[in-house]
Image (cartoon, rainbow, N blue to C red; front, side, top):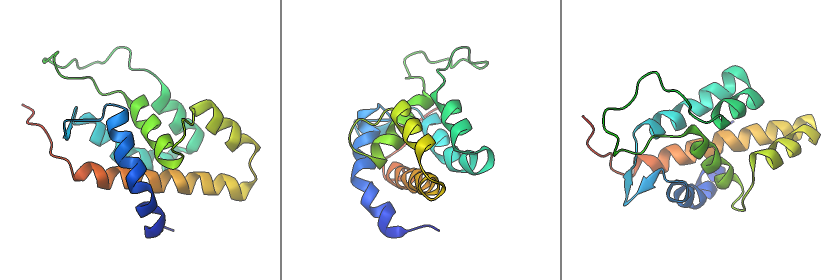
Length: 138
């Protein structure tokens, strides 16, 4: 169940995390792929589960099949999205390893709460991201 109050409580952290991890610079989205990564995180989480989604987003981009023709544009890294989500949930520097360790030892109810928190953090990031202007991409 979506809780508006929980999403609202994540807004401030979401805004800070977008700038902290390079998704937003000078009030503009650095790469429009970040918006896609954030939009896709929730559905991936529901489809394949929490741990596989975390692993998918934590892997570095190695060989993109399609290379961008403009090298001046920052390449979007899904790991930055994952860091922003974790920062949004817990403003302290919660690492992926700590989060997974907490998840593994948690009860079933707590595991469900972890998933709900991530979904709500994704929604908060998505809503905050919409407030920024997209740069012109050609």
